[in-house]
Every structure is written in C-alpha cells, then in structure tokens.
Amino acid sequence: MRAATLRDVGEMSVEERERPEPDPGDVVVEVGATGVCMTDFHMFHGSFAVETPLVLGHESAGTVVATGADVRGFDVGDRVAMNPVVPCSACSACKRGDTHLCENNTSIGGAGETIVDGAFAEYVRVPATNVEDVGDLPFEQAALAEPLACCVHGADRSAITQGDSVALIGAGPIGLMLLQTLRNRGAAPIAVAELDPDRRELAAELGADVVVDPRERETVEAIREEVGPVDAGIEVVGKVPTIEQAHEVTAKGGTTLIFGVPDQNATMEINPFDIYFDEIDLHGTYALTQESFERAVRLLREGRIDADVLVTERIGLDEIPAAFERMADAEGLKKVVVPGER
Image (cartoon, rainbow, N blue to C red; front, side, top):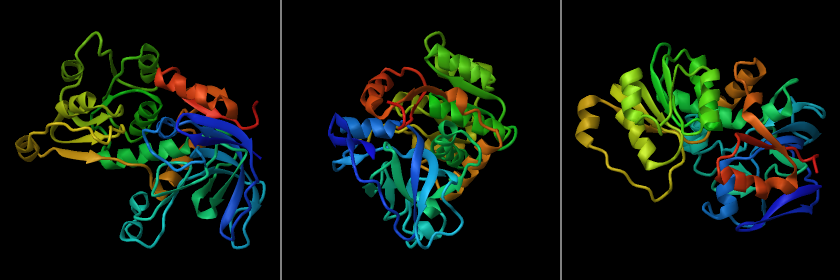
C-alpha cells in the first residue's frame, strides 16, 4: 500500500509498505478520507517530537476490508469513522470514563504516550472498539468526527446550556465546528472574534449572532458592548493574548475555556483573588472521549453539523507537505487527504 511516511523533521515521502493485517480485536480500514490537523503540522515541523519513521493522520474514515477473529458487530464492507485514542481501559482515568486522560494511551497517528502508524495511507489498522458506523455519510465529512468529538467534549467542559451566552475567540475549522456544537445546545447569543474576513463571514452564516473584526474594534470592548460579560469565554487559537481576551469577557460565575493548543512553555498572569471572588471556573479541554466520539458521529449522520462547508481542499498523499505550508499561512479551512487521488 502507499503511505505518506514522516522520515525526519520536515521530511515526508510517499512509499510502499505492507498492508496491515488485523490482530484478533482489530479491523483493517481502507481509508476513504483523512483530515489534516495542526497536530500533524506540529509533528512534521518537530514542535511535537515523535520517533520516526511514522505514518501520521488521525482524523479518518473509510471501509472495513478485514476483521480479526474476535471482532463482533462489524463486517467487511461497513463504512466507519476512526477514533484514534486507544485507552488501556485499566487505569483510574479509564475506569471513570475519562478515556482521553488514560495513563497508558496509544494514539493512531496522533499525539499520545505511544504512537502507532496512522491514516495518511491507503489502509490503517484500528481496534474494533474504536470505530463507529457512519452509514451513507460521505467519507470527507465522516473524517471530521474526531475533531467534532473534541468540540463535543469541549462543550461539555464549558457547561453551556440553553440560553447561555458565549464568546468564541477564533473561527478556524475547530472554532466553526464548536460554534455549531454550541448552537445545537441552545447557546445564545454567541459572539465570534476572528481576523480572517472569509472565516468571519462563514461564522455569521453558521449562526454567530455577533461577529467581531479585531482589526476594526478591540475584541474585549466589542464583545462587552454587543453582548456583555458572557457565561463562557472560549479561546480556540492557542495564544496567551487571546486566552486573556476570553478570560476578560467571562462573567462572574462563568467559565473560561482554553480550547486552542498553547505552546508548552507559555505562561500568563491570573489574579487568584478574581478567580476566588468572581467564582470563575478556568478549564482546559483536551482531545476526546469514546463517548463524545459516538455523539459526534451521531450529530454528523443526523445532519446537525454542516461539515461539508468546512472542507476547502481535497489533496493526495504526496501533497501533504505543501498543505502544511498553506496551513502556516491560515489558507482555507479543512484540508482532507483522499489517498486514492494522485
């Protein structure tokens, strides 16, 4: 099979590999589509260190072509999406349902304690417990089940419910999926701050009640004027200044949620008295759980999330490094690898 293999920092090549065979509890999936994620970007550039050679790619969907001897519930020909986080199911985190915080997790092509070959390839091996049936959902949309599950988990962490106000700082692919996720929960009003005009326009089309251009109006001031202090200030960029903005617009008794991925060495100042006196919850949200993945697939299958509008590029395996360059310049939205395209 063909696979885009990371050979070293900044070095990726498409090469021939043996097609994987299933272990007793696994399925082998012929990859229909795989989303390109900022985690892949960081692994490629070395800002997230991994052992090479390694096949990246963890947002994937495709067709089951082989099943292990112990697999029940899935057959050859089934169309599935892949949850790349494989928990040990034995540690305390797993036992309480926090499978994303597993002490011994394995990641298929993504970030984890142990990383195995992922889905920037024609075939990928996955535990049967980590796939969900997607029915007739197009693979390019089904591949977004993993990032959508991160949004579902993040919405859980925000504790947002009907009629709660939200400010989203950032409207990239994840921010736009989170916007739709929060609208599904009845959040209102939702304000979105975003530098890119096309992304601002799409945010408005997808249901943002207020859209702020930070170049024209200072973000915190604009959100306070248009909405007031919000029940949840959510940062989806991963930068300290934008985290501070989200925190500044959070109302007393509200939640500030860090969704974007900050630099590992980043620091910021927080006044602990304000946290105490205003009873503000400061939360992080990381990855997805098995339960949020199941819900994400259901949302996509039932048409509650417009995923197709987020896919702006369809590329082949050999085009991935060039796609990383466009991601660095924030060009377009979601880039999806279709291994059959050359």
